[in-house]
Image (cartoon, rainbow, N blue to C red; front, side, top):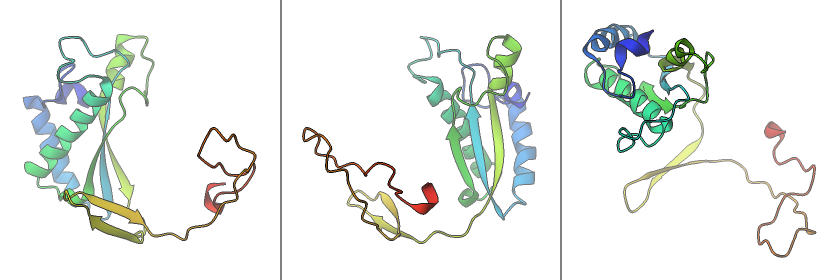
Length: 171
């Protein structure tokens, strides 16, 4: 299991043996330029111990930290172009085995490298706010959606009429 080679239990720092594995992976990933490379971190369902909660409050933080550690290694030491990489943490939400046994939990503590085909470029507009943050807004046609006028006056939020199609693609 790659996870046992890369990380100690409850840790996000790559072990020395894991560095050798990541170097080989980086050599392969350097040749890929037509796909996005998504590094996915996963954990078992065992809660983070109290002594580690100052670093990782939950398995969400641990899985994301592991994925981010691998991404940083691939960029800094593996030479993989950062424009192709992303990191995602799934915590214990995508198990591949039962968490009822130690073997199953061990299988669920993993990193997955997923190659995602690059789709057509979206028509997006980028702008920076006063703090330098980038906001990406998809430029789509806005459609006026009929609202249910019988909604409660206690809520200021208007809701779409029942059975009204919001957008043909999402129905």
